[in-house]
Length: 254
Image (cartoon, rainbow, N blue to C red):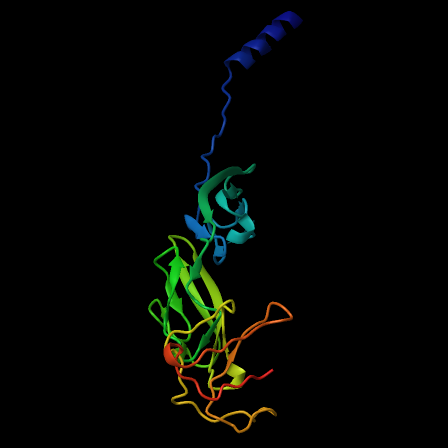
């Protein structure tokens, strides 16, 4: 009898139906992530659908993606959602989107002197890479004009943008007026330094400063120049007359 009962149970197990519920994965996705970012770009707020999931991946914190935290390169940002509403054990699905974080371009420019006199001609500035824009006092297109900038220290910016990032490169320059001692014009090359014919004039100059103790008279209508000595002993030769040009009342001030 016991043997027959075992056969009956075995027959029951082999011929009974087993029902299994198979649930589809929840549909999950998210928005708010750009395909490309600059490394210094503003953070993005991510929105998952359905709500209630969690974001993960480089640069993610909560629902925020920050390019500088992610770093340069291509990153996969993941939204994971688990559906506990209709499934006792919960089904989980993920949405994955890539994003690319780009570096800022290296930007420089040339042509701007460290110092100008108010009467100096305009300088042509050259940006690298080409195609950017210059801004700041005295700037018109790619030209810097000292008289337009005015006396003082000025910051000139060159701004260049590629497809993803913008870089601003600043340089400073000083504009002075060699009509006054405080704005004495720097002689950039003292070995030797020669001006062109009639390059400088006292026309339009004003009387300034107190005369030196060794000066017979003053104040005069002066133009002021200065240079940086590179040794303790220097020889200065001031040439005037004839082909050298006309100069009256030269004075030295130490």
